[in-house]
Image (cartoon, rainbow, N blue to C red; front, side, top):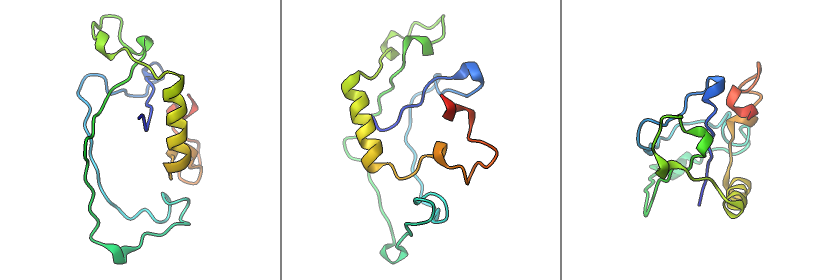
Length: 118
């Protein structure tokens, strides 16, 4: 199930991770003042230490033909979400996404990053 889409908009200067394998990295930090629904949800530090693990995780890259360079022969990368995949992505975002930096006008008072407009 897709949980995030990062579109290739290199044409407007946004770096795109196309020349290296995907990786997953996790960290924990206190972001009570901005990442938890604008500070409405506080971390219950009495539950520490926190642990996380990944089970049966499979990273899959989806790209469209237009996101590949013209001299690329990486046909295995040419995938895109179908209607069902797009519906599932919206469902995950609606019910599980707590923070989206593209909607954080407090964090970016001069305007959100350029990739947020696409």
